[in-house]
Length: 70
Image 1: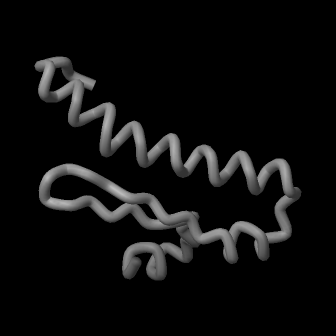
Image 2: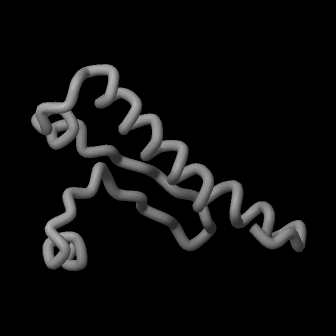
């Protein structure tokens, strides 16, 4: 969050990763809805955030377990 403040970035959400590798993603729907972005783009941004979290915290670890470089 400090990095985002320094770079004046506004994150769409946060991903929490447990020690066992399970994760939960939380999108900031207040920010997305208040950002003057059209409704279809808000939905796309939220879906992209969720897909990004799934890729990095589910797919990449699975690939690593299989010995595949992502």
